[in-house]
Image 1 (tube, one colour):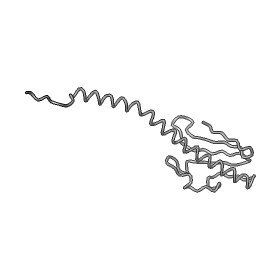
Image 2 (tube, one colour):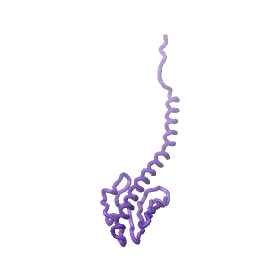
Image 3 (spheres, helix red, strand yellow):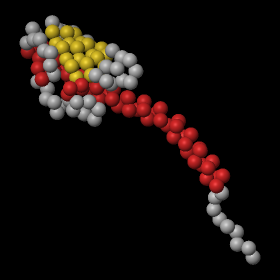
Image 4 (tube, one colour):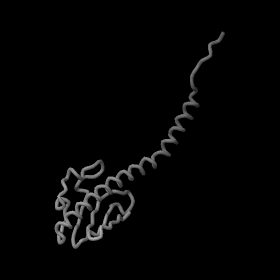
Length: 128
């Protein structure tokens, strides 16, 4: 009796490698879009916290003019996350209007995420 050899041929292995490569190329855009969504979520949460803190500052002193994150009483540790640090955020509170910006959130223009809020009515909106 002749023993039958078991195993894969070189062609079969190459076909599997090509299929795995095609699947990997299809997954790259999905992974990068998930990363951008995560960056956006972190920035939105931090900007929301900044807006809430600005509203408290405004209610305590309606004529307050704040141009720094520290002016809102927020420490650098509170804004340090996976993607951004406290230096990524800028704020402006004057005349009942708040603007907060996080730089470099998106890969396409506009790259920054900005929230504008009316401290009197409490309404707020993001630029994207």
